[in-house]
Image 1 (cartoon, rainbow, N blue to C red):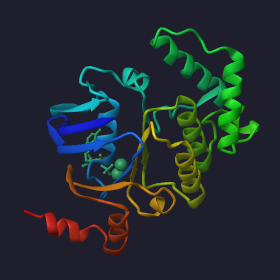
Image 2: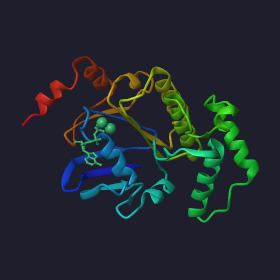
Image 3: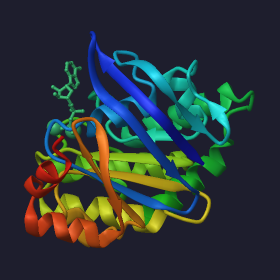
Length: 250
Ligand code: ADP
Ligand code: MG
Ligand code: MG
């Protein structure tokens, strides 16, 4: 599904990603871990096509298509979802109405008509039920006064509605209490299937107690320095990142 080859990227002449190789197949969950500042969020941003980052070498290929010339919106329409893509507060626009608009914009980009209201309503109900999201939440104003857990719930709801091929969840270190972790983990576990793939980015191993990844990769100074199975995450939790830094020091 996703193939990243020798990816070098950075910002203002400062190279942050220094030759990333990563292959993600449909049905897989990959975790990307690594110390603060190792380039995890940059990698997520570059996959999503954020324009402040410049790709200087290598490629990001989704289902055989090089994404080089695709904008973030085009990538979203091709099925890439990045958490925190829509962090704006919009007073007066509900969680539900925001999603209706996003879905119909996506359909328009593919030359399709709006989803019939009846189908949209059914989809919203089904997804909300699956994720145990109550009606009251769906009519709240987007992101307005949301707690950490509610922001996560909203993100997972967006992911459920957009049914991405590839979801990238960048779980930044701050504000992840245990409830928020569970919301994310339950959502991912319920939404993953054999046709989609998930990349979970996290600094800590904790999240991976709830989402069991097929592969774990450790990013350090812009390179994947180690890949393994979930055992690698346990090892990191025990030993920290220092042993890797020593092991990989040139
Ligand atoms: P992580 O998510 O692993 O903590 P980041 O990808 O956020 O790491 O950052 C990696 C490095 O790139 C850091 O040294 C950071 O300061 C730098 N960096 C990331 N984004 C920017 C930016 N927009 N402007 C300047 N430097 C950046
Ligand atoms: Mg960071
Ligand atoms: Mg980060």
